[in-house]
Image (cartoon, rainbow, N blue to C red):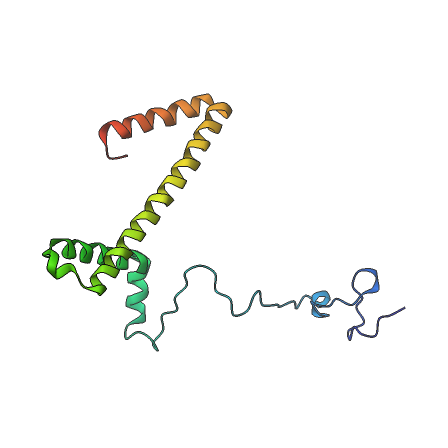
Amino acid sequence: MTNTSNPSNVPGPWGWPLWPFGPSVASGEFNQPINPGWTFGNLISVTEQNSSAPDTERNIVAAESYGRQLGRLVDAVAELIAELPQSAREKPALDKLVALHDRIEKIKSRSAARRLDHFAKDLVELKHADAAEYARVAAKLREALADGNGR
């Protein structure tokens, strides 16, 4: 029995049509977009429509992300605000920027703590799985902590 709902008469498993993939699967011409219109990650499209020099901007962002650029600006402005006399600091826009800076610093601290917690668990696992490699890594960590630069 041929399934007439399949225009190519190429049955899928158990005689079912190849829907949702369509008959082109059998012919090797399969082309299906995955999540069209979705963006994964922090994707920013730089084109001639939104930049006077998109190639330059892409090169800059490849070396220094927008987050890093903004972070450095926020850090610098927060330092400048801290140097102002107290009476000059009492402006809503400055208060909001300082509060933003403080929230960002807390997020950075929590993120670092999570990474270190994961690292500590990995060290324990390494100690049990490969004592020699654990000893090598532990010695390197002690050395890095002693000289204070982590290199």
